[in-house]
View 1: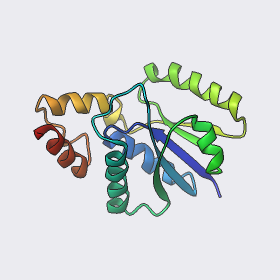
View 2: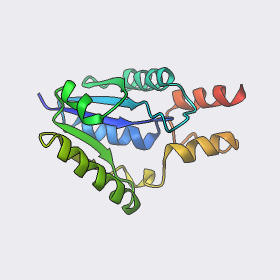
View 3: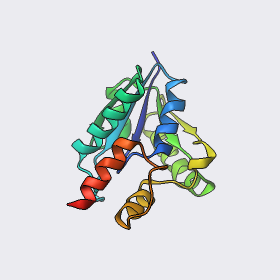
View 4: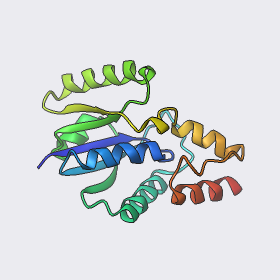
Length: 161
């Protein structure tokens, strides 16, 4: 069974993330969306909220080979624990490549048996990231084309408090 991890902070998950996830579901027997707990970031949504949002989307889209978990620590350690053979990373633009390339090489040095697979989202999502979505939401911008309706509702609720 070919298992892939799709790691990220997903704060919040965007349609670009979902597009990459959809592509990965066709390449791997199982995809584990892995919500990173990053102590250097202060997320808008708690780890539990992010996991719950992603689980809701997975259920609504009826992905049979996708699950979601959170992890803390070294990604390749978590990948080994889950018997993953690949790590999925999205590349939106050339600017993403240098960082992702460095991380892929570090991960390969730590666990050479785990491949990093780069996937490109649909071109309509190449400019999209969670930071932009959060900023637009905070400024009452229209984000309905950028996130799943479940995320849109959660963002509106979070901002109204």
